[in-house]
Amino acid sequence: MNYLSFDPYREFNALQERLNRALGAGGRRERDEEMSLGAWIPPVDIEEDKEKLLLTAELPGFKEDQIQIQMEGGVLTLRGERKFEEERKNGKNFHRVERAYGQFVRSFTLPNNVDRENVQAHFSDGLLRIEMPKREEAKPRQIRISGGEGQKRQNEPIDVKRG
Image: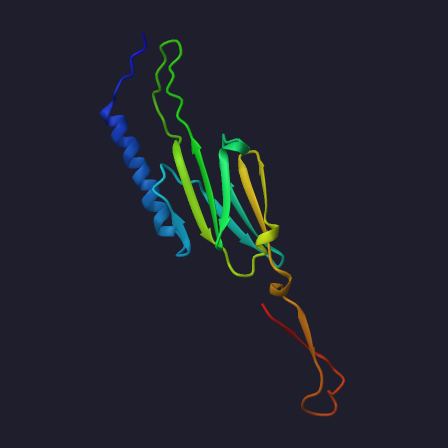
């Protein structure tokens, strides 16, 4: 028969770690991002270039079917759960548990320039990458201006870039 030992110090330290992570992440959070009351918060990077936004989330140990991605009303939401394996084999107990377990939810408000119909997600080596291309009309383009002051510059176009 296996007995589960209860260590109040370990439980308190685990709770304190979760609170520290939640409070630490909360200070860096962007105002358009919502975090749930999930048990843990996977770290996320968001990059942008002229063509797309790229969101990369660290989800080590996950499989594709354990992650849900939803887009609704301009909000991208990631959900998942890492279950804690409580089974002790051969009378072994954990001495330290530092990995986070339980459910997570992360939501991000997308900018208006994202082409929401062509968003793609790829999962490999514990990294979830979500590519969000920009709409064509939102990409920078060059506008040529003709005419204007002085006849000498009449035929010289002026390049204007919008960003």
